Image (tube, rainbow, N blue to C red):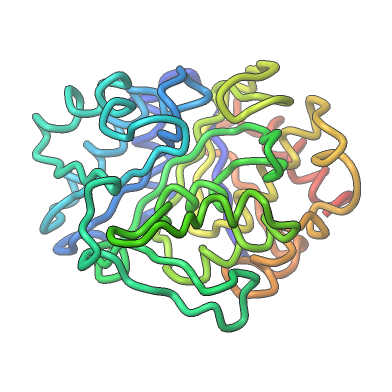
Length: 300
């Protein structure tokens, strides 16, 4: 079974401790890469909430990794300025976290991923540090995406790891992605290139339409956690459906939606919605876990 843990809370600091312990990533003695959501400098739920970032970093550091590096590339603005505006340096530097701005990475810092078996024209590039890491932890938000992604959860968050352009080249991989009729399949294909040890979804609030930087707000008051990107994205889509969302999110089987269908096909995560188990972490979480599970069962 692909486990997705559900916690009803607005206390991110205490809640993330509970969810992180439930997911249980093995990170002791490993070089850990941390990916958050800083596509823009807009406030949560457009970007990772400061308390969420700090709480997850603390949980990782408390488990004795060799190192912890946050790696980020923003799609809407200068990454360094986005991170400064969102207080990332202020919150993480005192913890000993290395902050890697992918805008500044030299050509030698990237690894080319072959186009074979993908919809990418020539493939794409990911940071060597990501691919050589001992463990990867990701945190994502709950939101829709009006620029062709349809929803931006854990799978879509991987776009912020791909080089927009490589030093010495003018080819724009993000233009290719966003202009392609296969954008959502290409998003899933990024995820095939690297594993993830834990995903924490901050669904205390979210965007049920619009997105990624602004939209119609909802307030589920939930934290979700999983080792499985497909399962947690299916749960996120079910949660959006429970509030009413865009036609692209609401229509069809959840596992027929392009991002999820392609990721499941590639073995990124759970291939069958019947194998997703929603696990409430306390009695207050049971209603929401059951509600999400019911939607996945009936519409997955």
